Length: 248
Ligand SMILES: [Fe+2]
Image (cartoon, rainbow, N blue to C red; front, side, top):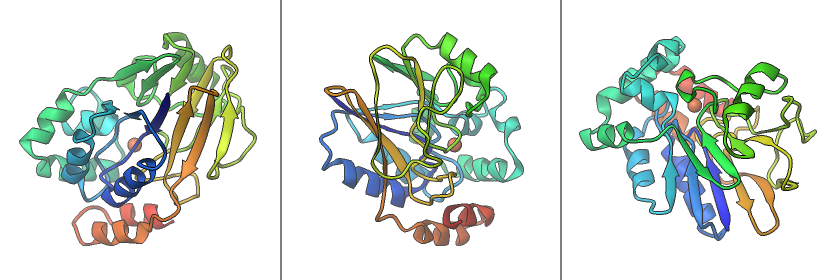
């Protein structure tokens, strides 16, 4: 069984389309999308419609979906740029897409994996799991019912042990970075972001997990040109900073 795992598409249609083209050649059996499919970018409806059309996809709610629905604290935790973008997004989402995101779950499982947008500990708090943060890593591991916990939210690819220490020494996860899990250790994994990478590499990232040899492999999309999406953002009244986040 081969799983593709993505997160944080953030209304970036160009990156999502290239990702889907790419995995059509990678023999994927199931796709897990860890939320924040909307927010920041210029094509929220188009991205949701594409994601909704994928039969093999399991899709979670992220804090941007929660904020668009004005649930809980998500909208009030946002910085001013994210807040403006989610108001812009909410005003444009179709009723069908609003209904769709309202029905999204906060977690999913596929042995030995558990999936969340932010953390297994009270997912609706939208905590950030980062290296060396022993408290949040510990809570996340404790509350997950599976051995491998997979989260997005930081937009940074990551592989941590239960102490929050990086398992892979790489300062960033280049295309093909791979790790063979040992069937025993607990891990926290982050695929990075499709729509707005934040690890100083403007190439979208995702994971393929192959259960036959238990390898977790990070991939980067090489033929994605962020300037196209950035130009689109600048042609809207979304905050212009969001265009520069894409192009670095
Ligand atoms: Fe996000």
